[in-house]
Image 1: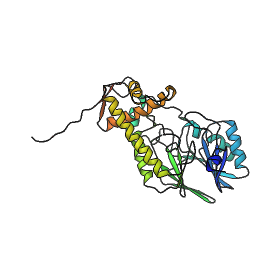
Image 2: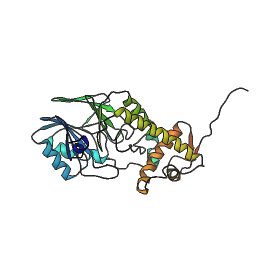
Image 3: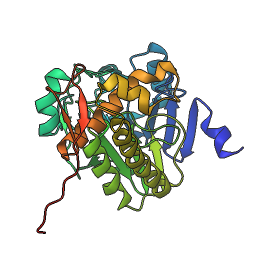
Length: 305
């Protein structure tokens, strides 16, 4: 059986003591479904319980079997990752661990802009971990250790979990798609910083929240960084055609994507505009929001004749 064939199963045994159970919530934003990971045999950690679907809960409890769940770890509080956490906790008595609630980890910029820029798609506003994990903190069980890495970008409270040379990357790094960065939960400047931070590690394998494993993490990170840098150039080029609102700019930049993808593209383009405003390259005629008109700031040089 090939690696691709194995990964296409609903339950994939990645290695002894490491399984992926895919939730039945396929969509253009989730690929074939949310990946829930079970680490350990008798003493089990659950990473990203997934959406609140009875069928997924039943499958997970069947896979857990007679094992004891000692920790439920959540990469971030989007409902397709976190909503089932409370039900698993009720069944197992295990604590829910995460970086914090859905507003935790926001940058001062995003906190300042939050009330006027929309967003909040898919956010689990009820999420409250029983225990907050700090950057670099390790959670251990019988035969496993997981180190939490604070990795904002897709969401302020996003964590990745390192397990030896494997990194569970949630929605930050996926192989099948780029990560949506929707302000104020998503932050492009933070996303770029996080990708560069991860590029300094030596992980062998990424196991994302959706889609197949990433078998060349360094190459994928380089691709994502280059993609965002190129998109920033496209945004500035679109602004060179004249000032515009974010909706118009989205159609200028994402002219080749299907209409059903445009709302997500608009959110990511807004993230680029906010980063460019903070960098002094773009300005808006009013507080950032749907009605704001954005324009490029002309580059100036100073010096003596």
